[in-house]
Amino acid sequence: MEPNLNQERQQAHALLDMLPAEKLNAVRSLLEVMVDPVSRALANAPVDDEPITEEEERAIAQAREWLKHNPGIPFEQVVAELGFTMEEVKNYQDPS
Image (tube, rainbow, N blue to C red; front, side, top):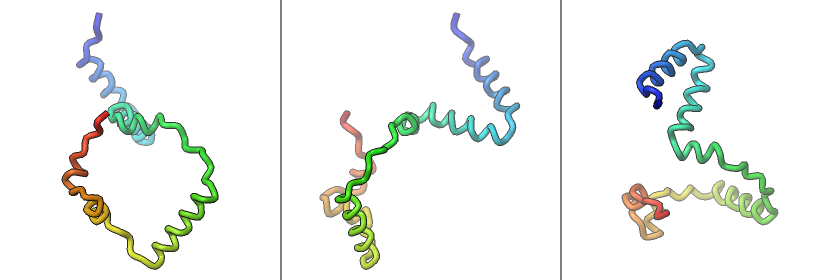
């Protein structure tokens, strides 16, 4: 026999109403991850524990030094230089 969904929701709401404020935030965060597939994927993604190479360290240092003397490049400008429009970027759908 399938559980009554409305009854399940009512029970869940009743339990939420009984939680102290400090625990409610944790439950809300958990529910967000459960409902949002992107958040769930990020939460389940492995930690990037690959060490940064000397070459990467040098590239980061060069980029930081460049930014000390130059303004950053606006995202819209980068998009335009690559031949795209912001509308295309906003409406992009992953083909997979």
